Image (spheres, rainbow, N blue to C red):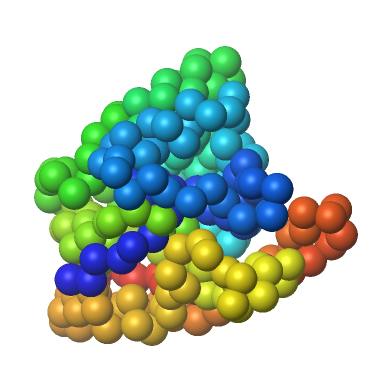
Length: 239
């Protein structure tokens, strides 16, 4: 399994394209290498009242919106935007993130909206062991990080929680945002959906690749101008 030196969330993630706080140069803050992943994300979330936009990722919603509701897990949920959206669609959705600050914000928002189907747990996913065959959906939106995360191994373990007919949906950064040149880009490592599928190496007699491609979505740049972002999309269905 590849260990990425990356971002949302312990490397757990929301992402730079989800409008985090930036420094004056327009880049996310540099991680302090003396901090553990947990310390990094606790500090990151403590720096502002809100770090991410609170909105569910549009690429994820376009995919999951076509699925019948069931039980779901969101990996590296941050402040809970995707989990809250899932609960609003009728899912019993559980968000996991390393930051207790982020999780408390997510719980507060779920309570404010009266969403009993949205629950959250603060946990280090590097040590997390899911219950086998317990959910119909696992989502991981921008599960990339500026600090060490054994991303592929966590996704592989999460796949074991998915019941027959259920889905694993992974949305990642495929290209830097247009407002950042490649040589300036200092965010999480960019990901190819096909590479993700190959590295996960889930057995083909048990899993179907329903999508492994790139998709665009509208965005707003730091200057307020309309723009476009490119996501890597991997959708796997358990046979």
